[in-house]
Length: 244
Image (cartoon, rainbow, N blue to C red):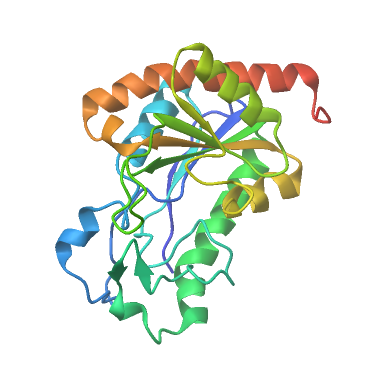
């Protein structure tokens, strides 16, 4: 069993989630790839872990961090999703994932992560779940060119937090994607399960990874996102739990 890392701060009304914080490959797992691929966006959301740590420290709120690479298992996918244990990612084959015992992988990595997250939610009863991710400026396999957004806010059916966040970022002149660079209506597994299913407002924040690839970039985005998250939390709290 592989357990996530926890920063168990005061409640603060916000719980931070970093599904793709790690590029670690645990003992007993052989992906069959060159080690250099573990430093790419296909293995880890570059900068997302340090940014989540900075936000948790600034806001004094709890956070949960994945401890395995998304190439081992993608914790931001449903257990039955085809890319839960990816055979390929952005044009790179992952041969070691062929023919794995899927149920054993879920029991070892996926289930403990989501049980721990559910426990944190019960303990802290947050007003807002905020999932922190990063995206690559250029996909290697798509040929679609450079992505124009500096940040993106993703959501599924519950738009309470997301629409507030989009407006706040755009008011600062930040080029912000509305359900871009991909749609939360398609990929929103963690927040669907732990946010929408529990009636908790939630949003996923995507930062282009060249903006948070170093400490200065992380500090810059921490200064932007920490007050934004506080404002979203406060506005949600003022409307009450049934606001839509």
